[in-house]
Image 1 (cartoon, one colour):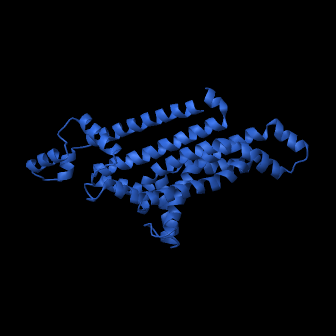
Image 2: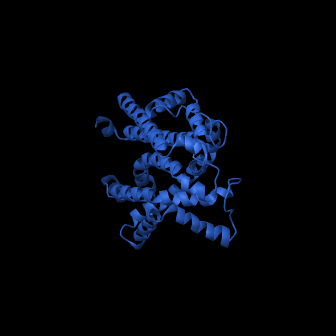
Image 3: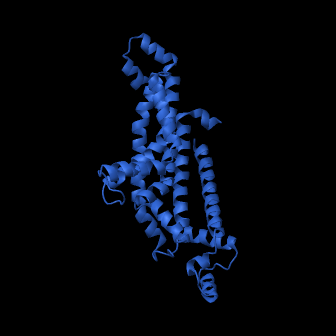
Length: 305
């Protein structure tokens, strides 16, 4: 098990370095950083001075290695637009994104587990088809469109919830539903497939033959085993929800990392963009690593393979 963890850890570090290099190079290739900082109509002398100040006149690989060395020492630089320390700015926005990601995950599990169980127990019935239809709609409907529909219904028509902001728990209700509903179909399909497989197993038929109550067979014997792969998917989906919060946070002006990413792109604040991308990527890599380890711990065949 230790060898498996070390191999996965090495792979995670390699992925993180690759993502950091790609993000750095792509951001630099998206435009002239010196011109973006100086602004439109700036004099060439001012642009040259900015290039000299921020060492932008050196080869891009040297710039990347210098950035990586400073990052490993905890120096993420200063925001070009907000004029403040990048690390302090980014970490101040992290709580709102974590609250949104975790609440969306809970919402997705809350609707996908009952639907998945019902679809498996009543397989090929109208209940199964209804659950699959809900899953298909959730997967096919763009989350920004669903979010705007929620705003139209609950904020403009019914006036139950605030349109934007992050001052109270009410501000998180619609973003949570919009983001969680988009993640629920993956859980629902996995639970349905797992439950159908488990319900046809020999030990379930034995339990039924012994007269065990149907509800106990489903929720005590079958659901527990069907949820094993869901544990691994939960870690991966949480990373997806954190990274996918950019659109939802922007629509609802939720003061989190996603909204900060949108602002940094708008104002061409490269240091902030770089750290947001790196932080979300690192969280996703760590969650994937945790999912791999959990899978290997639950299923020894994975460690052998």
